Image 1: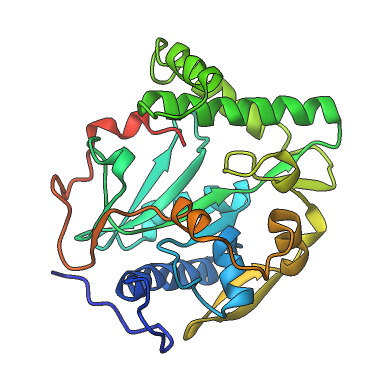
Image 2: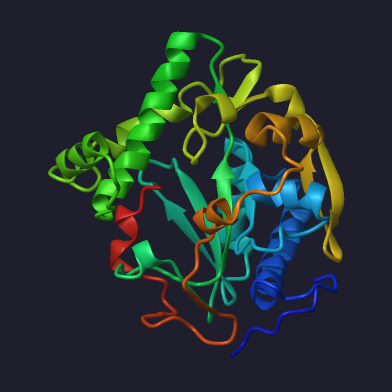
Length: 297
């Protein structure tokens, strides 16, 4: 193994068996933070990672990933600079959806590691431990335009589920997924991405993340929440959160200080197998993976 994690975790009991994985993820996050600081790129912890920063001063104990937001221009700069200046020996930037210069989101993955998610195990893609990079888009003030953006975001989500052969209860959803699976794997994907990105230059008081799990009301945020970044303690390092992170968390989760049920906890966990010591089966140093062109969300 080439990767040697620095111990960045605070002292916790390993109740969920994730401490070593979390420390590995935190090393990736520290690299992103240092890279972004060097080049003046803004990012924010989001979702459960922002929640962990506020509620636990680090990882939520049962969390097995870490998520950040970037605005489109910041992500574009990150992608371009990482391609030229990034540590490609240790890290791999995996873009989802990208073909027209627009990505639905990305993962910065650690080479020589393993992180297996059951619904992606069969695909020829990079499967290293990662940090998710989600794009925080401008959301139009006009309600009709907003629903157009939301529709195409959810189209990408369901098209991705159909491509993966996702099984879900509910007759209407099953029928829709079967129909979508009849079309080519990237059917209307480029057009959908263009519809999501098309409002970036418009003045608006809102930002959104419609490509995630949250429904519209919990994925729509005031732009003012993100006008400033704030550095906060996260385990033994500092990472960035939105300037008004508590307001963002209230919109996203409601009563964000209340712990979820065991059933909800399992819903948000991703990995079935991981290693910070050895590469996944099928790892290739040249970074060419046949199925990555079909990744959507």
